[in-house]
Length: 473
Image (tube, rainbow, N blue to C red; front, side, top):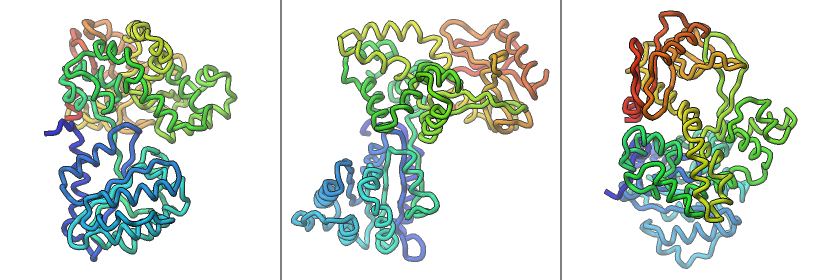
């Protein structure tokens, strides 16, 4: 083994895509294309490298650098010449072509016709930005040549919005490729990679967001505070630099959207408070920024889940790592650079319990949704939360048959994610009162508790960190 953790689903999907390439497909067109997207530094390229190592097929792996079309064309020819393709050697003396039409046609002539191969174009959004004709050229070459060859074309991109658009109606490559999303490593994979117990695995996930680059520098078996103490001594730690690089790539010119994101990262959740914290922006500016952030999957907009319509939208940073980075690391980078990472660590310790209590809720909701068929009341197809304008009541967990407006509420639950403080009868009494205020619930609606430290109350279903990790088993 080479230490590669997880990604069984994604590797399986790539193997499925490769099968018709090997067997000849239908209609004499064995060629296939897959469009892979995911947040920066989430491990897309590493996933494809692992796939190529396991497949052991001739391939070329080209990564665009985004300087200029001419630079990327020259880099592409150099990669083909150095690749494991059977006829790659004859490219060594070729001068760089002037167009992608010529470059891709040249590639097609080097691909084997009687054996499968793989072509990878990484950071494809750079190529689209550099050359408006690139999409049309790729479509033409794929339709006329590549689809007739036993080749798997893998297109990778970190600009999620652009990669989604490439396969939409009206774009040249529409319906020619299978879409695939590479998420961060999940909490179970984080725990396996670091050899941590379930509760500590969730802490590591909240800090790292499941980003492999951060997890690779996390010492095997080390707890949260040991890792943070080490990382905050190094200005070059992946924990520090990944957030800044992600924001610089996602928002090279949209300073206002980045300011709004920062306001949400600091804990503001409502439209009015976000605008105020972002510098008293006018409502139109806040609306445009929020639309951009949600389109790019940086921010999630949540509505209360009940049988009654509501406009009480709450916003949160959707990426766990960015949520942590915006709250603690980004503001603390100047302090770390002055050699006082210990002060940043102290600020994290001070706020950790309350911050974690809020940050863990969407992770728990996803885990319960994944467990719905086995562990939750029948008919649970959606898991969310409930709140009012005044937060009276505010219920952590709601199960329902659909969202955001349910026909039937299947359960109401509470999260108590504290060390050495189990869910007790007082917590249960509070949950019962809140259930009576929930539209669509009644005295027969199931109650459940998700607790880090056990449960001493009777008559309530309980989920522990061990139970939740089973959602990703």
